[in-house]
Length: 267
Ligand SMILES: Cc1cc2nc3c(=O)[nH]c(=O)nc-3n(C[C@H](O)[C@H](O)[C@H](O)COP(=O)(O)OP(=O)(O)OC[C@H]3O[C@@H](n4cnc5c(N)ncnc54)[C@H](O)[C@@H]3O)c2cc1C
Image 1 (tube, rainbow, N blue to C red):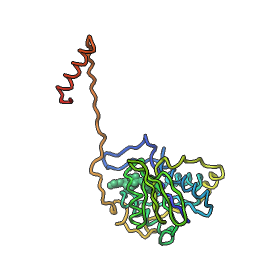
Image 2: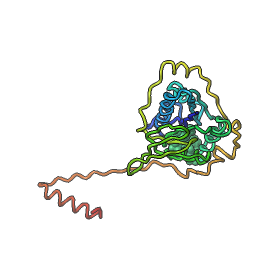
Image 3: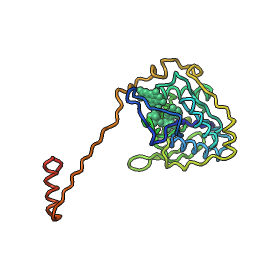
Image 4: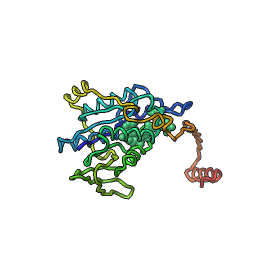
């Protein structure tokens, strides 16, 4: 059984900045972290491996060369292998192009198609793009089941049971494998890297795949493969005025406040 963890490197949450001219995210090498929910996905894979040591955990990321750092962290945390998809041809990919590329990488790594017990784990959403589309899109492209918003996974023989968080409570879903599961933060408390993990991460070779390696053309990925166009990016301007009113009694103050709200059609 193989578990593939889709892992995205994102800017630290307070650090997301957009280029208003180009409509793209400004990504610098500094203060990038593993998308927090992807750490939960990875921890879940490692938990499953803990009970079934024959499981192989592979972390996969598509991103700039410095995303290697996130993958080394994944190895330090317990992943067996890590693969980076990085090339100029991938840049500008929207969620569809990203999902196509990730699905193709999964098929390639699995030797053509996912194995009958394989599982793909990812975060429910990434803190930067935040669309929550990639997991379900990857499953649609691979034509395998998807279970979203999962907070518990129980691995059975050739299938899983998953507790899915919905507005009214929880759903218990049973699905055959292979499948894609997107996780929420309640699923676990991510662990810490071990010393031996850190040492392994240092020397581990991380293969870098290009669109060509995956048999993808320029029309499949990058800007050309992305039907989404960011028309405009802007920061909403918030303005607040404060009006101080001093009244002799609370009754007068309340009357004054009521008239103020009525005049403006608020009540
Ligand atoms: C028109 C357009 C142009 C864009 N241009 C750029 C650009 O130039 N450069 C750029 O970096 N981004 C660009 N983006 C953003 C890019 O599309 C998203 O980063 C990407 O599609 C993932 O979407 P998301 O962040 O909403 O992921 P979500 O769907 O919220 O992520 C869900 C989960 O999917 C997995 N996942 C998502 N992305 C990756 C990944 N890359 N690798 C591994 N796992 C992943 C993770 O497990 C994650 O938790 C662009 C988006 C649009 C719409």
